[in-house]
Image (cartoon, rainbow, N blue to C red; front, side, top):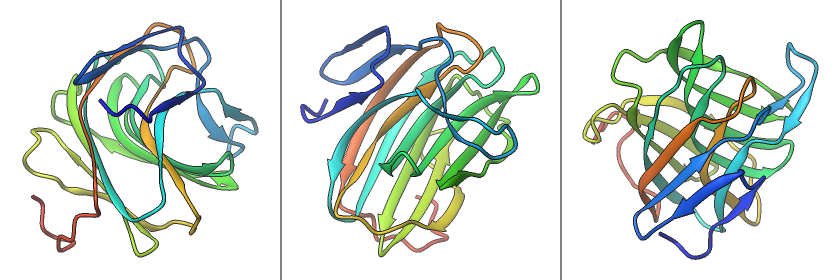
Length: 191
């Protein structure tokens, strides 16, 4: 595990060892800005490091999602008004794969996740001012989830996030965390 990671909104319970991070979420934790609901929340748990060049960040996530809006995955942020989070979010009684891009206001793009939501992988690549967001159900095949522009900055915070807006106590294990120079793969290369 990288030594230069730190918390935004440290959770009530967490531990780290050489190859994984275990987190238990706090009540009413979330990242969201205004859209539809009218509120702003910046209380989710975000374990991150800073990068100043293009990169690829990848992680394996294990969790048992059960309550509305339970969520875990990855996040990139510049500040409280410019960020993206992505992963599994429990909604309407089932796990959904989604992403929230926030540039002043949040959007939310989501769809059914038909694989085993208790274990999945997330990957985000920042290259030439664009974010390529991918997920995997098996750690082998990496379909595209989102491609978008992202504001330029002198540095970015990148890492893992988890939130429980409606409860406390979601247990999440993040492992296989890697931060490398940006992968230079063709957009339709799913490896």
